[in-house]
Image 1 (cartoon, rainbow, N blue to C red):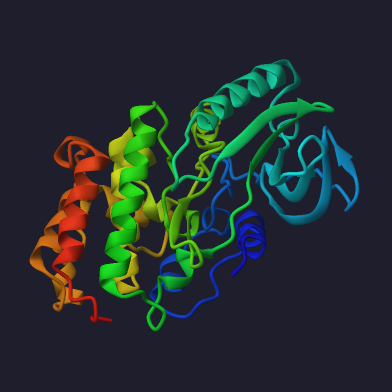
Image 2: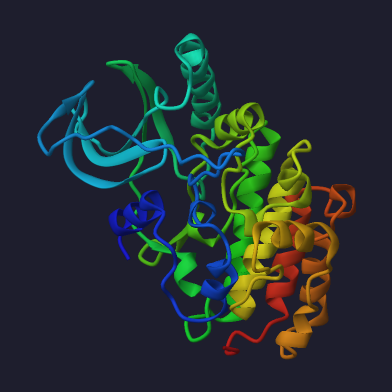
Length: 335
């Protein structure tokens, strides 16, 4: 899957049509809760929809649009070329006016630009770079690195699972990159396989969608909106408590469990049921599903998925080290 097809699917909020328990886990959720940037208003209203529509060849600020990559709630993304240096970027243009009242719109723009500026300081080989954040014609935009690769969401169901050693080592690298971000005050808030891309040519793992996570979270607090992907959220994130780097640990634990087993550790037929499961139920033991995997890996996942943030690893770096150790104990030939 190319970066373009992945981004298009991501922004359209298309439900996963893949067979297996991944689809089943989301089948009972309202459509607006199934994918990132899809929203459910507390009063049952409709989701945010972008009004941006640029054509190939059209100029926006100092960029020329080559083609649309995708669109969805709050944003449209285009493949574009920077007129200043000919660099090709993923240009994300956000629509705030549809949701924010006029008297709060400027505040919203400034907040988003501040958050994007913080994200642009993240210079890590496993994090998609944000090159620029700005405003043009009343719209906030982000120019980001255009990444080629395969979303790990394609490897979350039976028949498409990665070798467990590969999946574990990939998630160890993700944890290390998250630790780097956490040290700089940035929490992702939407860690999941769909936001992790593997470039098979460079053998690099890349984390996407740091750009608006913090802004979206603060906006959700104001409006009563549930943003992101509930199946991967930590208990404290679902019930509105403070979100920290430990919350990203939980989400990564859910992601790795799914990559190893083809199923989510917490499932339900409704949003209230899912929230209750995440908040109160223990995940199934990893070895009850994959008895061929080492006890240490199950123990690491159990710790990352603790309900109490303080009971998880002390940092994402500690989680990374634990997963590296576990990965080395898995037979590389194991499928």
